[in-house]
Image (cartoon, rainbow, N blue to C red; front, side):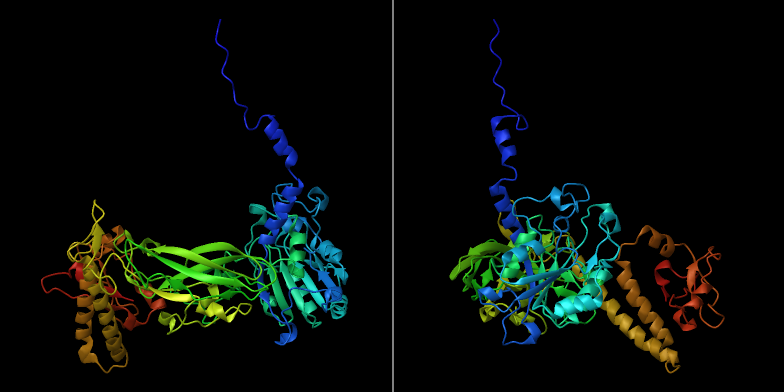
Length: 594
């Protein structure tokens, strides 16, 4: 007598017909083809120079076997990752810490790099491991133990036309794979140096899951090419061999700046323009963020803007034509960088504003366009809100075209990608962005704000947060403090040589006035209030018997500061407080200079 129960849809995890078909398709030919294409997409060409620094010769890659009209008859393949699928795959492959048992992950079309190069034919392939890694993620800090003598390696390299050195790591993940040193182990670095002593051109293949410090081996004159693939998976051996043989165009772009030293990690591509490095031209970066070469000589046309000015509520279209004159199709990623000429908050040296990946058929040209809006250039301002500051911006389409030096405002180019055509240098432009304020530097006057109806109106010459002109007050205080500090430095220099005794009192009063005005407007922390806001200030004894004591709150004699003489001279401990004839000094007049 009851109605029939409603039809229940099968759970996606049940043994429905669709689920069974999906499970049975895992590892199919279509899956393998997709995995192979994904492995190809990981390959990034970082370096490709002519052998022996001979500009009359073509770059080392792609390798062309002798039976295909090339000059490569014999190849030496070496390195701990050259004949391993597990080291191409990393952690969480078959097991938590990955696997080095290749039979667990081997499938159709998954050769190692060594096997793929041998299967290519047309040349003779020799193999020497060179060194052996420990074989466990729990020993990732252990060096690669040498398995072949240096004499054996040099002799084999000297008999070869090209050396392919595949360096990597044992599979790892999570805490067992953590490092306290990014340096690639000394065993693998020494292997490359020994091979380089033979004078044979070297193609370096890196399959590390993180950027490892190479300590200059990438810059050796014998290392003419560098390929990076991170962890391409079991299909990585075939993909890397395809890249070495030129069966496809490498299209990877670095998602990081590859460091040359551990300190380089503190110098990301979006660093502040005021951030300084060690003074070298590269600032500890072997290859910049977004770097990635190709075998073909891509041509970039001019970077064209639909308008030279970007309105606050409008948009500007930026477009560039990219041509591929080679005989191979290429998946290429066009990057659009920007940098502001000036800003109240220190601007970044560059920012990636947009990117687009396009397919470039052989012999074709594609126009790539980006839509820019004023909000693309906003930043978190001093008013503690998002701000778009009006001003000029440089735009460019390649990481090696970043404007530098005194001509940066003109979009000057100091570096150009070696494997690209000269048209790339034109892929830059200048744009004026209309902001939320008017006037150079966006002072306290001229700020604009959008009302509920969406219309913009001026705030009447006041900063959005400090209606009393707090921004100007802070700026004036900073300028006054700077001037007072400079004057004080000069006067103290005179005092140190005993030539300006008459100016001593003037120095005290000048410093106190500047510091009092600057600091009176600064909010004090609890600690500062407890020290500066004390009811009485009493002088301390001289630091070492000859200097003038500093000032401290009365009743705190146990906190003697005489130990300051350990690291300061007597004249460094100058009491710039003023004595009120009517009693102890006021708290806001007592300042200690160290």
